[in-house]
Length: 482
Image 1 (spheres, rainbow, N blue to C red):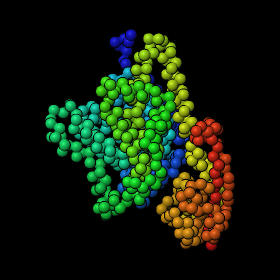
Image 2: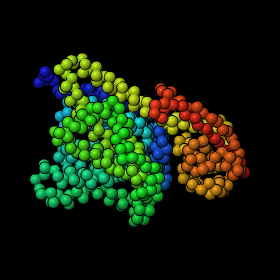
Image 3: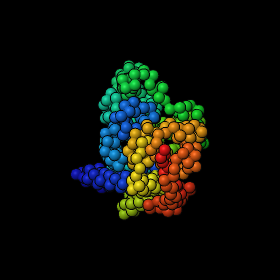
Image 4: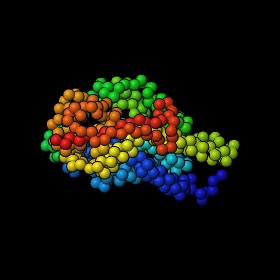
């Protein structure tokens, strides 16, 4: 039985957990120097060069909120930017912990590891992707809403659309929350005008785009061509795709307390905002991926947007599990928690370590160091992986605009000036642009160096269901001497 003087959620434990996840995030940032896929590096480049190309601040693909916020740490380089993401994710964990305390959830401090041990959240906690900043805006706005500061909550929530497209759909859901809020004594139809605050972020984007571009239809004209209703640019999936991806979203071991928490909260009609936010994205992305709509690619990382809600639902489930186990043995409860956290940590670390794309950075860096030791004057850099350009710290917009037409791309290579350096690989370049090493020699470039690499994970060598295992890659340097 708890003493009346003993707080249900002692703050010291939460502070310890924040320190642990901060160290873990920083370690990931330093051990894996690049994003797990090309998007992270490109988002960094958008932010890094936004001061030169100012329309980057209002780019549809670049995401205005991400670009504006990250343009400041990007001045200090890629590593500093990724450590900034770690700080941002730790702040999200603190916000999630505080909301758990305000909701009177016991063991509120466990919301912190339940957040970071979501495999996709750990994967992005030291990346330059857009989902983590969305999650921070989401949890701040949600806390404001639940504390009764509804108008301010809507203003903050309006920023979600500036971070990711999911912000539009969660913004609509937010409007429903406001209209159905029983704390407000006014009739629901009298609250409709106030919901226009949810469009304030979009209005600010439109004004900024008009000022920076001079085009009142900038957002429409800048819309990515592969974001179409039925484009299926990145393929399609079955309707249950995200259901079977839940172990990568919630965690393989944490899936049990998540389901228990979902059922418990649903029956108790508690935390309906968090449950409905998760369900909105789950249903939305499941439907979109069946058609490949708006560039939907089936990535589990999309759910990092509502990772704080997932963590709180998981916490509710764990509390129920503890309540059932506690009469048997307190030792068994503590031992079970340690095993759950340890297995979840191993599974999430395997998920991070198993991504082959992030290992390419080691090969890219080795080739970069070789070039620095055998340097030649460079007037233009052509590259196929963002990390290549990041290391050279050159304006990415100096690269010709390649297409899927190989002949067109070879013509652009021939037109490039003397001193053009080509940094290419054996996978991304051929897949995206149809250009292979022989094509550069055909275009009049000399081969400076080609190297093959066998890239293993730092902690795990074997693969599991196609994830992980050794990655074979090639790197090439070509130079236009005349």
